Length: 297
Image (cartoon, rainbow, N blue to C red; front, side, top):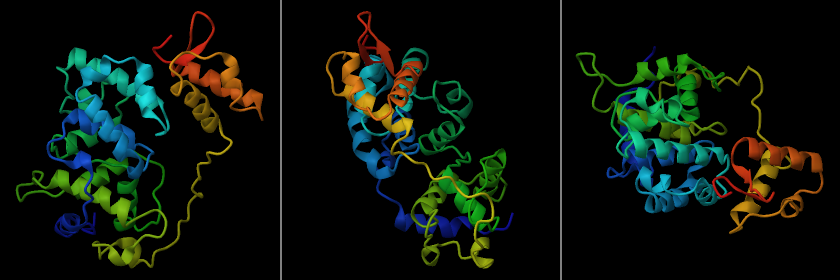
């Protein structure tokens, strides 16, 4: 693999341009960083900072969250989207409190056994919370690598090759072991994709990777299938969110009529969205036939 991502140059850039994000404070625990990683999935940083600060004050350790009903966690999740993340994090908190001494394990394989923890999240926590030299690959990292190393504008579908590419870039000591800077390098690679090597209008003139293969080839346009743009307005996701808003804003269970009024233009879609919330375990029906958030029946 060409040395198109020189560690020293990238780390020097990161020293100057690293964002001051609260979960990067050295005092943060693995649990607090896990919360940030779950929140940041498919959600912009700007929308996560305030909820994260509230959550770590309210639930500083897993057992504090585990002691709450799932509905309270869903209520606190608010408008972050994809609320199943909150439900799975609540399940994870219970396991951490009961089986792992109220802390997040420091190894990837054990983390992968926890509810809601996938390969990316396990590696991110191992790297950013515990300083382990493991490759961490998100959308931003994949984009930087595919441009700087492979000379393409956009990455293809995720694959195991992404991890191999990222691992090959990690800085090493003369004896071949990972350098102490490897975890920070992973964070820098991710930051570069978020701030400079963006999906649209990349700021190539401000990029420290002057040997970028894609730029050297004249920045050829993406030649694969067009990227799908996720809609929100009018989708089942929107309807699910409106239904959950009713329950989050209520201190008690509600009857069906209170849910029906939020989406009258397509009753079949509304019913489908409500059924999916029940199937996902986000909403429950009480013995009297009313509706409430999970754990509040």
